[in-house]
Length: 67
Image (cartoon, rainbow, N blue to C red; front, top):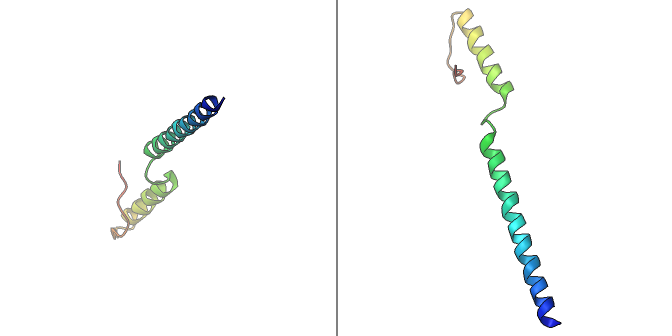
């Protein structure tokens, strides 16, 4: 009876460790798939760059938009 309980404990620990690895891998995959900055920030940079060009006063204080 004791060996069955010990096996059950080991099995539960192994299963929990496996599930924790899967969750961590999923989290890392989600982080890798997301862009570095939100789309709104990129659009805002583009609009500021266009406005500066229209005014013929490019300041370059904001990172230039990527094409």
